Image 1 (cartoon, one colour):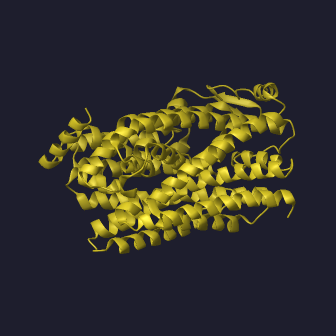
Image 2: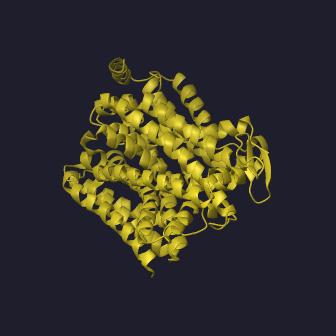
Length: 512
């Protein structure tokens, strides 16, 4: 191993050790019971709430998936996705955060399925069970995408075995998650968001330099038809462009709808120490998201320019292009020991983006099994200590399945994340919006909407969308609309419980 590789490995090793140390520090606080392990006792500061929500949201998709899409197809697809997500982030904090924080505390709910079941009262066990099942079904592939990113990172950089690299990364995530619970996960997410920010900034500057400057980047981008257009999608292999029409734009921006149903993000709203501080969190989160996604998209375009300049290799597939930041960091590491340490920090940023999502997803999945399925739905009487051990065992079990799903080194991070995102957005988002803002919603309507949304995601993804043409719409949009229609139709056919409407009116009055 060269001196450069040793410096890079040292930086990454220190970062991983620091994450485990955070888990150990918070292990005592998580011993305060399942409420602390799953929700941190509702004691998050506004800064931690904002940055942990966004770090857990962005995942490896920010530093690998989004630049890869921009590199291979130009500005349109990546750009409209980023715009939709930025709007979704702002609106989620603006409309959902405060009301969910107050409502979840009022009904004493510490998980999303538990909140939905207590909000409606009727069909409680069915809502609990279905909510927990949805979390397991869609978080497993989501977690798998993060593990795959770790494997790709070390394989492309050091030539390490993909499977071995993935297992090491998964092991670190598992250790600090099961040690410290929600507080450890949220605190490490804050640290990881800082590392991700530094990584983006360094790669941006260095990438422009090796690509020959901003003028050369722009010239290379303009040399491919439609590459810098928001209404055309480019093909860097053929040099041709295809229309990116209104339907495609709406479909891509539908990514933003997913925010209203992401359990690992919504839990941050529930965990903040005061609802009045969410305004601060909203400002921090929105600014960070807009800047970080803009930079990530631009890095993809810069990477294309760097390939044209011969600084890094030219990628033949979209999946391969997801390693553009890795290749730029690898190039930086050849400029001496100091640069190698900085490159190690960049690579730690990629690890950070992966770990910040995987840990949150694992924790949400474990809380659904231990708290929602076993304790509430099945009625098994477990002590807080036993519940936490069940949750920890679930973290390990979900990780094992995720590793199995991510065993293919050629799997696309962007594709896996987009499907899982659609699943949560279609099943939880319509229900959460109706639960928080429509007094007339019933438990039967919520149950029907969740089922319809989940089924539509699979049907549209594998049966309808392959038809192409006007049917080639991101599955989240039709699934969200169908789920919402089902909630409204079934709720209008029934009547909400009196106790539930009284609680709804109380929360509505508190939000005025």
